[in-house]
Length: 246
Image (cartoon, rainbow, N blue to C red):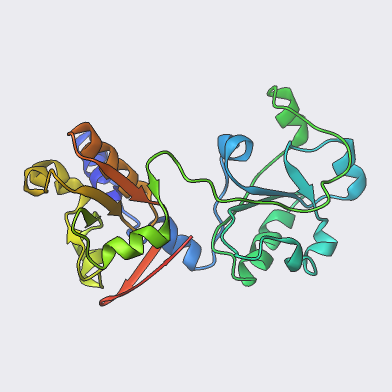
């Protein structure tokens, strides 16, 4: 998607256009943090952590937030979901969120982001505020979107299926590093032009590196009359060996 949008920017007259090919997965893998959007904080299927003091938290906090002070976070790993798959968003004072991000990543958590929450600005913007004590425990359950497929079901289909086809929509450069042996590969940018080559009688299950391009491809396929679902997961391939995790 980056290269496509860079081309559009160039056509629009921008001359100094560059592409960061590693994208968000590479950025995070290098140990850098990402920031959660306001909508993700409000509606995302996340674990939200308020790193401020107990007093500040109880006086007012973002709805759904759990309170674990920055001083206690280092010893709180067992309080988080055991499977390390929950998207965790942290916010606090000063640089606390950035420090917390590194601690949580060090536990092996695959998804995490920080939130720049200034309560005066949050409240002034009309966002909701809750008061009171923190919940007794952190509970998180993975929720699939309407057309999402589970990792377990996708992995089974990737080994070969009579009525389903695994479709890889990553770029050629990504696939050069490895792919599922029995998955069909069509880069997202080429999907419209090659859609007629796909079997109408099979469900098409789509994957990319994270799920963003897979969702777009799956939507295009359904609009064209195909039955399709997509995988939201991190996919890393080294030759025929592919690791998939939430």
